[in-house]
Length: 192
Image (cartoon, rainbow, N blue to C red; front, side):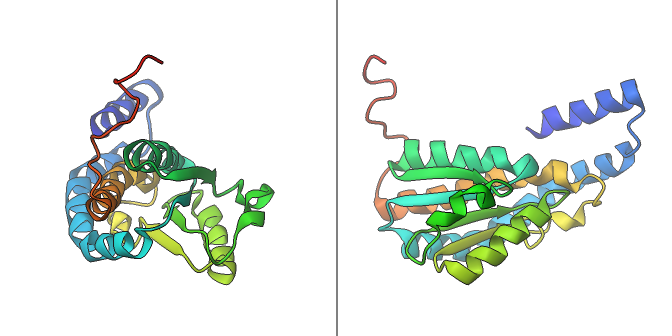
């Protein structure tokens, strides 16, 4: 993912004279440190999350902008495919177009809070969730250190950070469920 992002920034610079190539290069130098620090930072939190939500059967995962792909991927791959839990990804900007009507104190929400132009959408969803829900896990790029990267380009690094951090969440769920991330019912086992 980082290699593709780096190549894309270089191509944009070469073709369109991308104005933030220096900030991007600086971010690329910092992202490994940001991710390593974030992995260490989330260890207690991911263990607590897995314990708290080990008996839940349904999760809503919210995200926006460059991070929505990871909200979607975490819902359908990590939770549904790898842990056989019901899950649905909701774009933070779409949350108030109907999905917020199912919000209650019994349903768990995971909000992937990005840095960048769509952060306000995530913040709006967080404000509502904190008022009307009780089972909320906020995974915040800023608190995980992504703000070490210049704000002109930091939003592009959200997916790199969130992929790794969400892998920590799914790993801890797998541990408490005693359900290997590699076990499948149908995939690769039956004709489909």
